[in-house]
Image (cartoon, rainbow, N blue to C red; front, side, top):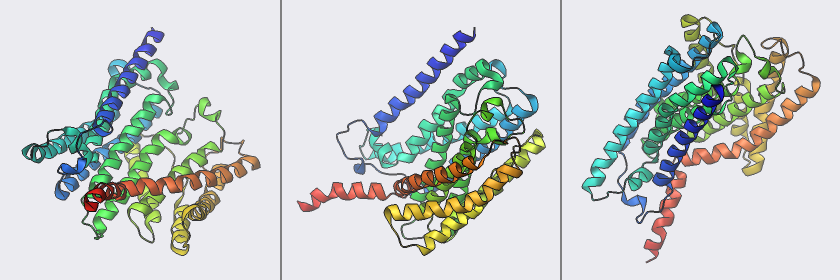
Length: 396
């Protein structure tokens, strides 16, 4: 029976992921006869409305995730089969449904003026306004994953790790949805203008993304009952994953919303949201996770390094990685050793050194990646492509 369920889960997950991947390729990468620049984009006002509504779905993902973790700890149950859609899962999938419906409305908004203008290929519409189509795909996968995730839960029960393939793909779907919301909001911002409320909302969304990523990446170290499978992992892995992800999101925030204290603001928003989500889980279930390792000092030093350094390229990456790592480990390592995780008695001097060195290396690699992702989100890559497309015509 269990082997039969395994193959059912594997086949369903493969078909769902493959189907979404095939549609994504057709929409974004298949050859077209005309330039996407001929299509009409979503208006700035519509972009902002859609971005905010999709963000509401992201808030449901995150709060539902903390509730789900708490329910697992309290009940000792990982639901599968007929009882899979318990209340926390309903909240998570309601977030996907909201995002999916909003993105479909965005496609309709795209279709009307383009069809009126004689542009009938939906690939051109989507490539002109990429975040709308990407939200449909990401949220669509979230809803399609329900049967497959239920099967995996039924097979493994409480032994199903947060790092399991269905959870990782759900994480990618939730994170992609929030990134699309950020892209839409940035797209709605008038060029050359800095709008404080919009900037703060974008930083809040980045904090929510980090919370969601931590629900898969590190939450198993932070719940009150840590499984033997988690304890078998290298003990330095927890702070390295946590610190690397925090640095990436903070660096991305600095690229999207330039300012002297952007990274610090993201860190403060993260902990405010984490505490709020944990408080909700405490009220409805009674078993919130521990507060995660504090990286506010690391974010603060990252901001200071950015203000005082005029370096570029690799030098900048190394300076910022070193600044964040120093601020992060000075709080994280004593916390692991003496406060939050007393069961990690094997955290030796070697583990301390490995944590510092690997966190620094990961941050140094993540810094240029964050810069590149940020450039794509603010539209610099698209602007370069438009300029290249126009260059031959101007030469004629």
